[in-house]
Image 1 (cartoon, one colour):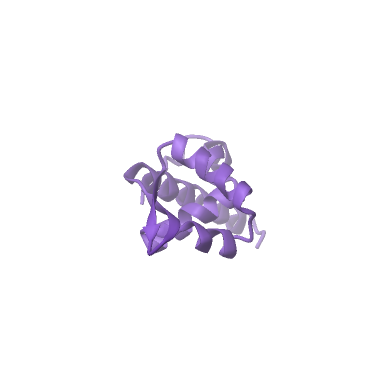
Image 2: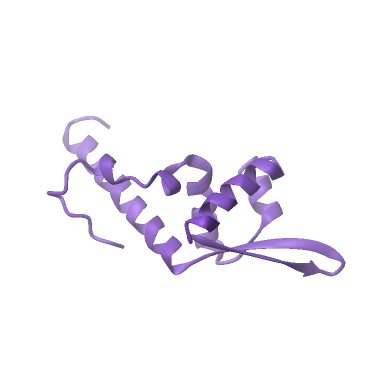
Length: 111
């Protein structure tokens, strides 16, 4: 996990808009856990339409956070998603900032 400088301002200012968006954070998290995940699995588990998922994958791929591989399993076309090293780093940094926000909330008395 990447250490975040506590003197760098409020942790919320460092949240990455590409990573932090709910669907994209879900894609990155699942890809991190699975190492290689099929399009249909993401669509089903994140409760998305194919078009919506494709748009989010396009954003992540353009940012260099995932790789998209198209191929065949038997006669059926398949699309697999893998996390890149940059994606793994971006996800770890996002989680570190979210943890900082949690610590701030807990230390301020809110739970």
